[in-house]
Length: 323
Image 1 (cartoon, rainbow, N blue to C red):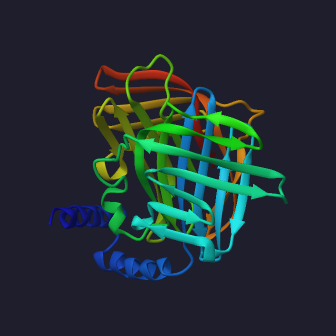
Image 2 (spheres, rainbow, N blue to C red):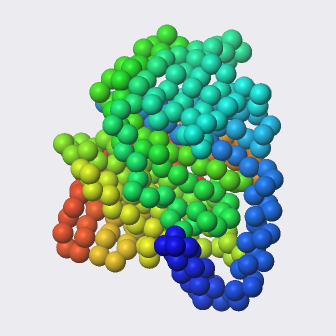
C-alpha cells in the first residue's frame, strides 16, 4: 500500500506542478507504455579500481538487434558487438552472459580475443561485500514510463582477481568495485553523471554517485536528479522525488540541495582530455556517441546544515557530461 501511496502523491504533484489535468497524465502514461514495448536497450556497468588503475566494463543488448561489450581503461575504450543469440540474462538482468563472458554480482569472467581489432581482454575478478541501496534509486519514478531507468546494484565491494589487456596484467586484488545499470529507449538529451568510490586520505568505506538530466515527461521537460552519498554504512539519498534541487550543473561543478543536505562537487577536467568514446542508446539502438572520463580529479563536499559530513578529493572519479 505504501508504494502506491507514494505513486499517488507523485502523480498528484506532477499534475499540479506541470499544470496538467489528471486525465492528460493518464493518456500520456498509456501512450508511453505502448512505446516501451518497442525498441529498448538494457546494459550493466561494472567498474573496477585499484590505485591509479581503472577498468570499467559495460555489457548489454540493443533493441534485440545485437549484444555488446564495451571496455574502458585509463588509456582507451573498446567496443565489441555480438549476435543476440549469444546473449542471456538472468536474475532480473543482474546476471548477463555474452558468448564466453559472464557478468554478475558475484564477479566477472571476461574472454575477448579479437583478431580484427588486434585486441585481447581476459580475466576473472571475484566480488565480495556487495553493498546494495536501501531501496530503488528511481524511487516512485520506477512505476512510471521513463525514457531511461537507472539502477544501482552495488555502491561498494571488494575485488579479488586480475584482468589481462593485450598481455598486460592488471591486478585488482584489494581494490574496490561499483555496479549500476540502465534500461529504456534512449539516454537523456543532456545529462551529467559522476561516480567515485576511492578518496585520498579516506579510511571510511565511501561512495558517491550523482546524476542530473533533462527528463522528458508528458510533452514537457524538467531537470531531474538522483544522488547517493554512502559513508561507512550510512546512506544519504538526494533526489527529485524527495525534493532535491539542482543549483548548478556544468562541466566543472555540480551542486544539489535537499533541505539541510547539500552536495558540492568540483571536477578538474583537462581540456586536452575529452574522455574515451562509448556507444550509447538512441531509440533502443547503440548509435549515439558519448565520452567518459574514467579517472579524473574531483573534490566532494557534503554538508548537513553547517556540519561537514564529508570533504575529500579523488583522482579516480568517473565522469560524463553532455550538454
